[in-house]
Image 1 (cartoon, rainbow over the protein chains, first blue to last red):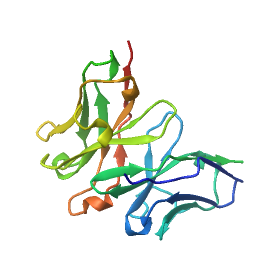
Image 2: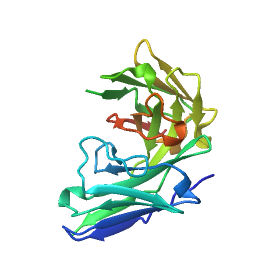
Image 3: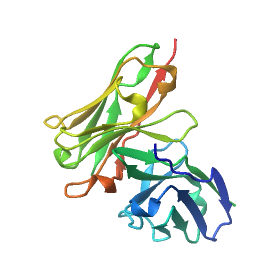
Image 4: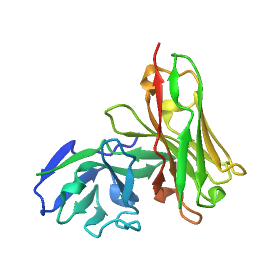
Length: 106
Length: 124
């Protein structure tokens, strides 16, 4: 079965850029989306179809996808961005989630 | 505004059954694919099942094929998950989520609205 791999955790200083990666075989051939989940809350879609932002999501969230790696970039990271982030793609009749990355904002 | 409200969770013994419901409002329910996604305590998101707007197309995760059945009633704007033969490892918060809109390929699947989740605990 298809797998998406994310680093379990990462940290970024407030105001800096965070780049969260998601890797999978030929991932660039698929559509990737990203979710943010804060403790005790439901996931929120922050990027879909590789690089589109839903209404209401700040411009500091952006996405890219090429080769075997998709990246969620958070520019000018704020304390409120501290959360778990999950990538997701579709493969052969299945929805696949990455294992999630816990982002800590220092 | 779009709202998804799950219900039906609770404590059930191993081998037991439970039926989850998700009441939708604020959009044309029959147009959208809908999904169930679960999250075990302290763990990541796990996709469970996905159903087309008409209900004619269903996709299931290998981990739940057989015991779990997704269905929908478009007249009632409701999504369901019938869970049989429950095991301890099925313990999780179960989320209802809205999938792709009309005209979008299933390969572009993403979930733009999520419910608050309902907790299912399987324990003796």
